[in-house]
Amino acid sequence: MTRTSLVLLAAGGSFALLAGAYLFQALGYPPCALCWWQRYPHFAAVPIGLLALAVRGPLFPILGSIAASATALIGVYHTGVERQWWQGPASCTGSGDLGGLAGGDLLAVEGPRIVMCDQVSWELLGLSMASWNAILSAVLVVLWVLAARRSVSRVV
Image (cartoon, rainbow, N blue to C red; front, side, top):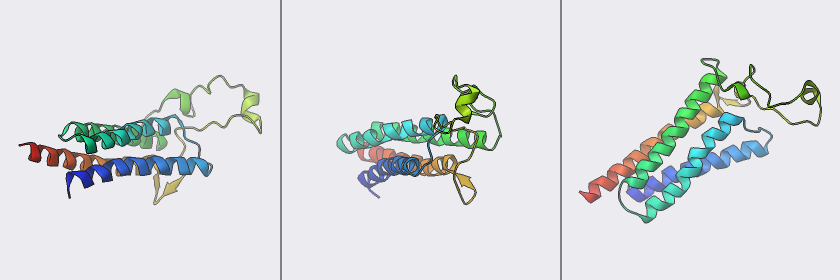
């Protein structure tokens, strides 16, 4: 594969994962705080990919691999929180602060919907969205690294 095709696949993969996240949100699966954290590196990876297409060299593919690594690691962390392997942020787990909401707010039919980070809202093949993000983002890391290696082999 060429450097260009690897960059397109990697940045396009981040775009596709973001599109999937927003599709699930539109279908009634609002994101928790950790879900949002997983999106931020993808938001960075897409323009990094555009820059990598415009500027030769390994810098932007390396930055893309860092972004993909970050979201993969956040996905692993989120998976561990969902499976109670470790504690998550107190603000979005069952043991945490509910952001100043009173008991009546929690019982209100039309009140704000609280999405807990330690609850799995959707699964496929026993894996949550956070787990799938971690796995697919790890694949994106490989694509970015291959693109960076193609960049170095052309420079040398």
